[in-house]
Amino acid sequence: MKGIRKAVLTAAVMLAAVPFCFADPGDASRRIERLEGELQELREGVEAGAPEQHGRRAVWSSLDITLYGYVKLDASYDSSETHNGNFAMWVRRGDDYGDGEFNMSARETRLGLNIIGPGAGAMQSSGVIEIDFCGSGGENTAEPRMRLAYLELDWPESGFTLTAGQDWDVISPLNPQMLNTSPLWWAGNIGVRRPQIRATQAFGADEGPGLTLTGALLRTIGRTGNTFRDPERESGAASGHPSAQARIGFRLPVLDAGTTDLGLSGHWGREKYDSDDDSTERFRSWSANFDIVQPVTEWLTLRGEAFIGKNLSAYLGGIGQGVNVQQESEIRGAGGWTAAALTPVEKWTFNLGAGLDDARREDLNRGDRKMNSAVFANGIYSITDNISAGLELSHWQTKYRGEGDEENLRVQTSLTFRF
Image 1 (cartoon, rainbow, N blue to C red):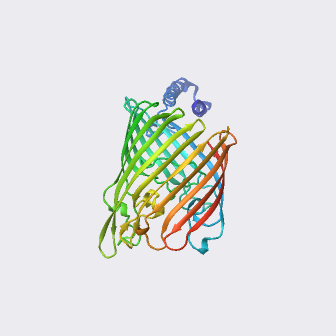
Image 2: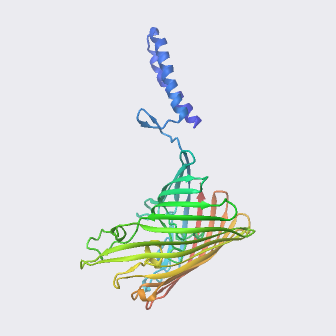
Image 3: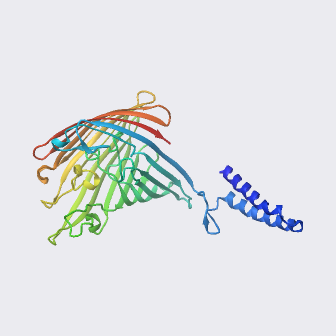
């Protein structure tokens, strides 16, 4: 910043000095006085980092902004085709998908900004903006996708935080560490990101026993399709109200290796379907969830989640199935995942885990996905503080109602540069 300020002042002096080459000597003193005044105003504005000068925004921000992210290349081989290829969600059904496939992608490359804003009394403000390239577009012309975009108002002394924008779901807040871009989503791990306003109240110190209460109102995200008279209408927005989520978290000193974090959470929402025959159907979406993080030793941590609910497609449950339009009923399901993170050797991290998503058979039509499971193991080596390489093996099994159970063995490598 000092370099920029010096360059600005130097440039101003050089430009302002040009007229003196042709000036009348009698005007020199008056011009020097005027120049000194203008330079003093410029210097004061630069020193203060003024956000606005004569109605124009400064070229740098007066806030504390930190850039973060990573560049990541993934390469994978699947013995059977998966949906969607670049990362595994479930194994596709049918003889046409039995052949192996190879994918290579840099779409997971991520870019983010951490913004620390001004405080007001006991309140501190901050914000986060984060994107990746998993949006639409061709494989070599991928488009950015918004991941996070929220502001946060924090009262540290009272433990109260207000969050507004797009952030992670309150329910099931954990993810296993995988090279696969989808960390067991649609295979036992539910919860993703959506627009919301959220309040969090924490009790207790950072160390030792504690309690956290969180509640949020979120946009209800449904689906569009041929079940509507207007195919552009979305069933979540048509419901006319937001969804609700809540979680109660406990921090308990169970083992010497670290505190145990437990969570009980749930959500409730509703979708509205307007059918072609002028009838209207409302379908509920709900879940009850459990999550835990348990340090065992300095180099071993266990974590996992479990859920039960219905109409969970928008939460990456039900193996991507929420409402059975033919039966006019919600699809029920249950599942969960568990994983172990190990760091026994310097520069190495190992992760082992498994997940299962089981949809209720009687809620499905023939050919629908009935069960999806995955088992994985990976090793990640830190070449430097910023560069890491990883190898992951995973086995996927997707069962369908009726004939057509499918399996897949996936081998994935990655090279990541973090900044």
